[in-house]
Length: 227
Ligand SMILES: [Mg+2]
Ligand SMILES: [Zn+2]
Image (tube, rainbow, N blue to C red):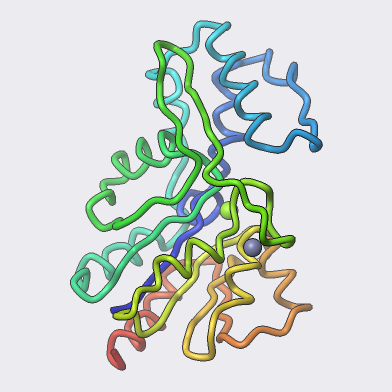
């Protein structure tokens, strides 16, 4: 089995769900300032409280989220995965939230190929989207307080996994890539922070940069042929 781990924002979708959702607030979207001391999850909680106050409904959020598109080449990559799904385990590791991701996986009709989604849990209580932290990370100093993606990868990499492909773009994707082994492949999105950081950090795995995710298909096929 091959394990393929996807970050979500700017990786699966060409944009950031937490930024895109602000469109539901219209001209009031600048009223909440980000306080780095309390962290991103708390910031998003405040935004969802604001959304409830403004009378935003789940349907309003769904229509804004659906304006996001799949990143270039992702459709082809997902089709390749679907064609060999019995040999590939698919995991999403994201600092967005479970409801946004569920909405978009359904919208793009790719929910059937995703085995696990690891993200901050969110659920509706009337018209308030209640958000919780995924975990409390106390061990890893490289990662934010709520999530170390290395933990997600190591928990997903069961004994039957022969190689790991990690696809991501952001700073919080660096930790899991640093922990990949020689036979694994990191696929950072060209021009984004993970890619820039990997220019300066030495890692054991192969690095395949992409602007079009169709480039990852060849490497996935190579892994499938060896496994
Ligand atoms: Mg990302
Ligand atoms: Zn970490």
